[in-house]
Length: 164
Image 1 (cartoon, rainbow, N blue to C red):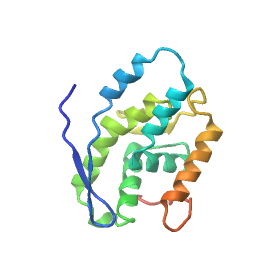
Image 2: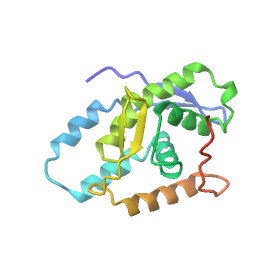
Image 3: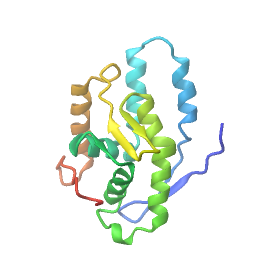
Image 4: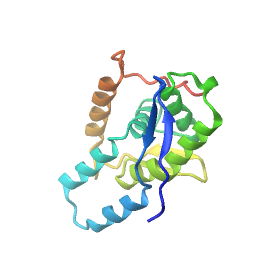
């Protein structure tokens, strides 16, 4: 397994958050051990992947703003949500760190459970619509519920122009 250096990001309230998750390689190994289709285990994996705030923010964006986006635009949206839209004061290192986190950890994990397709070389990510893992209607409902619970103003809408 590769050495993992935790990433520190600043949240919108000024606190620091450390992403202590290992890269996706460890997840691939665990996922590949399961050869039989096991719906409860698959659902557990999906919910585990959705436990990270940035991955949910990416899915909200893709779900509400069209099913695909450039990785760069997706990262800008996530950083905009972390900083309440104040991108002007965000250092370049934050964007680079968030981009690396998505490229090396978040997108591989989301793809591994069948929620997104992505191509880092083409700077592209999209919802996969893989109903074999999670029925689309269930994912839609789950994203709406979690979005409304996370947003202090009670809205579920994503600002699709944030981060442009």
